Length: 394
Image (cartoon, rainbow, N blue to C red; front, side, top):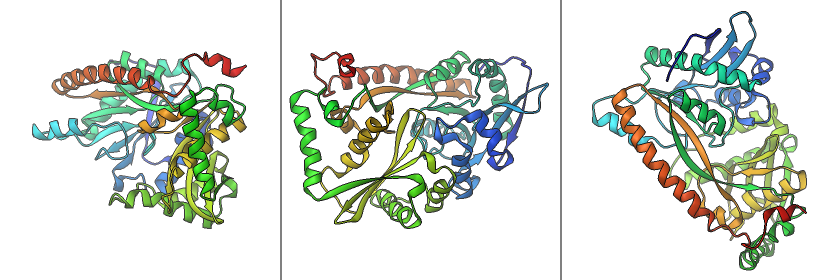
């Protein structure tokens, strides 16, 4: 990273409690829920993202030299592992180990446990964000020296920030996710009109199977999620980890705290069979996006996952005029349901020049494969080949 003097000062916050929600959220806004003060505070106070769990808060707060109020913030964690990130660097850590070097600790700018693209340098002034990057570069290099960090990683930034970081000398890495886009649909059936006939028939059958099993759905907004429902949902969520012999990253206290502190951005889709909850999916609401985050079930009913996590979300977006669903990491099964492949980004500064060169070569080669995959995956989308998608909006 290049660095040059700029008229900004910086201080480090080792806990999000060192700044008020009002000050932090004035920078972060509430359009992207995962870096709100309330979200980070719940992670910290529930014990999910702390130094003890390998997520040591090291957030940077920037101010102009002639002002006391902060003008920008960089969410930052000093990490001792690579779990909960969804941008995989295990092979990089292994290469360090094989050379007798320490890859950990490392510095991470991200929303913990959240593979959803969004702002990373928090400010309401986009021009200021660009002006700040040289200062950010200098601060990160100095912090890496003080802490012994091998590297700094910015996970799932928006594309414009990723490009700006690349201009500062970071390595830019590409990934792929699948997202649903609302093209002015008036109903789920209207959405299905954009499908070819075979795929349209398949999705109708999936929804009919769930309905025939006597399963119905309720959309419970955050303020209406009571203690009993949180506990039921948490059992569903935790089961998705327990079936793989793992403990979940998040605990019940985290979810209950979010229910108190940011209920206006929560939507719980509950599946009921004979009036008994059997599955649940927790979504977060952004300014124009529905984020699908956590799910689980107690009954393995056919197509229950697709209905709870995807089709109910599509129904909600159409009803409330939201522009897209960001469904998080992985899931090629989303393609045939109309979730389109989109690129994701991460940026990486590696302190050691020899490893930086090796990782740069890897990232460049990987990006060629990812670009090819994005193009190939798009060929399997279910949309009619004869249909101009603009027609859907008419």
